[in-house]
Image 1 (cartoon, rainbow, N blue to C red):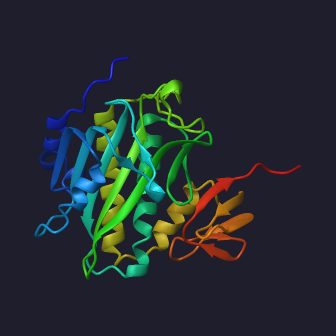
Image 2: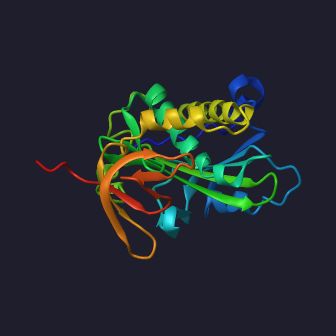
Length: 266
């Protein structure tokens, strides 16, 4: 299978030449690294670092939620992290950043790849109920302008045999109209920049963000099972997300846990 490299030069030029990508200060591509998130977290103490993007053609120690590790063949995925500062944000609103990122991924995949992507709470991206992308946001530095690193992994050209789990999918398997990773990265970054800028400019108000999230989230209205920290399990209908981005199962808010969509019972 032909898996061409990312066009690193085009991506770097985009910061200067493409208005919607001028939001970012720098985009870098490396051939291989342990974890793009870990690399950017290590730079969080640099003075004034902000809006930088790191992509890797291969990750050797990629991390997901709950410290799960994953690897893939080189150039078969988009493995990317972004570092941003959020000056003046209320701590309770920080949880919306990975949800905003999920919206951006969904919109980019719909617009550019032509696939029917949606969200499973909090920020897994699904096609036909199978996971095509995951997101991990980590606070790298606290304070009045917290630094957050957001990692995104998208399965692009993985075959069935290369999928990490049976319930995953790739854009190629979903018959996406575009699988050029450089084009997909440009679309994703533009969507993220647009959403982030609008959120910042309205003083981090989450009203519009929450409405956009609800429109794209297939978990809301579904019967679900949530495996909560401490070994508890909660089953019920997911009714909404609250002002902090927590999932409401019935009227009980869930801020963390593995959520499974259950089949309807007839």
